[in-house]
Length: 500
Ligand SMILES: NC(=O)C1=CN([C@@H]2O[C@H](COP(=O)(O)OP(=O)(O)OC[C@H]3O[C@@H](n4cnc5c(N)ncnc54)[C@H](OP(=O)(O)O)[C@@H]3O)[C@@H](O)[C@H]2O)C=CC1
Ligand SMILES: O=C1O[C@H](COP(=O)(O)O)[C@@H](O)[C@H](O)[C@H]1O
Image 1 (spheres, rainbow, N blue to C red):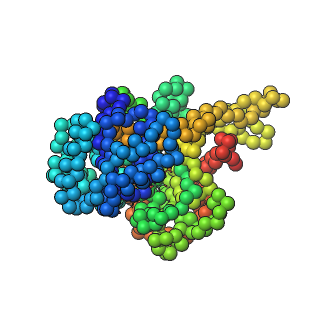
Image 2: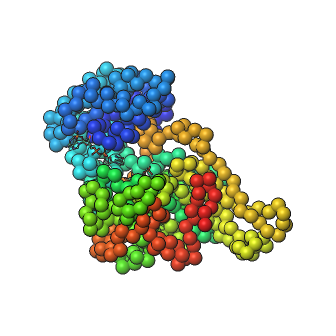
Image 3: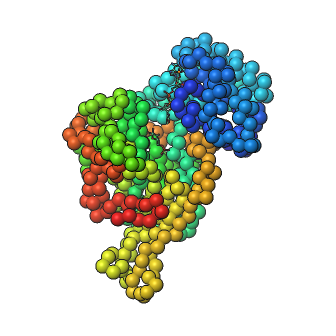
């Protein structure tokens, strides 16, 4: 990994006229610029089909970063580092022209041939672009070349494998940076630190002390204008195959022997390999699917999924998934890890709840109630922090206890201070740190796990869709999934207290 804090490179964004570039990539590069993490010697080349000019791209860049403007960053100067080339991904002449432009920019900005190719466009083009970049000599420079790939990485295991093989003909595994933006989130990165830097937790992080773990990632948004993509994806491929399983891997992995990308990945891979495999006939015992109906979200009436644009009125696509994962290894045998994610739910929130086992005997019961279990809640978003739920003496009585909480909030003072996930990941890629990107082995194992579920759901159409109201926490079957094990979902309120 490079230790240079101002790495010099040219970033080429394929799909520079698109939504991701506008909403995430330009603002993230601007934040890096503001924080002085980019050398003045940087350039960004945007390519897409539209016949834009440099000035048109620059004016779009300025628009997308205007809210982030501050005294110490000159937006005009920032935008002047952007260049545009109209591009046809299937035409070799486009690559040749791009190669000339990049060589000129290398000289102009004194960049030693370091290139990041960021593929922010539909995945069907990923393989073609990778091959053409190599064949037309864009990767043959004196510096390094890295390929950043957006999700989805394939549609299932066979298509992901095929895509990987195609890309690997042009780039080595260590040049490929597969983005999972959850790995760029502050508190997802903090999972390892919470686990491995606290003597309090690590000895208890196993099936002797933990009764279950719950990971919830709920969204209030519906599919917006992504109906066409979402119809072929659904929540399982969109969220579970990548973000949810990555969080599971980080929570369950063994301590790596060193904090290198290779060692961390190797531990994550072992978790994914230990996930209990299901037969298609067993999927209903472990997984629940849902699709939102109409309802009220954030005080607005919203339509059902099957009324959204580009969605089949008879759609079998799930917008909600909850599941029970078992990790069949020594540390986790018998501990369910429950996950749930969905669109049009009650609130936008990602949280992990680690529920510890009850003491074998407890002297201090709440009046008329059982004692509260100890919980460690990791708030991923919108708040970033941790809350430890304990029990303490009630002031007026020596014999009863009351639940208390110890709260740490990382971003409560100023939410703007936390770097965007994309900002961290782009910077990591510039510095050659692949720790928070997904290795092919992780992608492959995740698809194998998810494919069984999608096959079961494709084989058997859901006969009860839509089965949850927009603005709720999902279908009742999701609650039943935990109830049959004697658990329930912990709902955490905005002020981090537990809701019954
Ligand atoms: N938007 C988001 O929030 C997220 C997006 N992603 C992923 O990022 C990628 C891009 O998504 P998004 O920006 O939303 O998509 P958009 O549809 O908004 O943009 C697609 C881009 O690709 C360009 N393009 C399409 N076909 C061609 C072609 N034949 N040759 C050259 N350029 C082409 C389009 O430009 P033009 O029409 O000018 O050619 C446009 O710039 C996808 O893989 C998506 O899954 C992942 C996570 C979140
Ligand atoms: O990858 C995706 O993630 C977003 C949710 O990301 P978050 O950072 O806002 O939690 C989701 O809306 C989208 O459907 C999915 O493709």
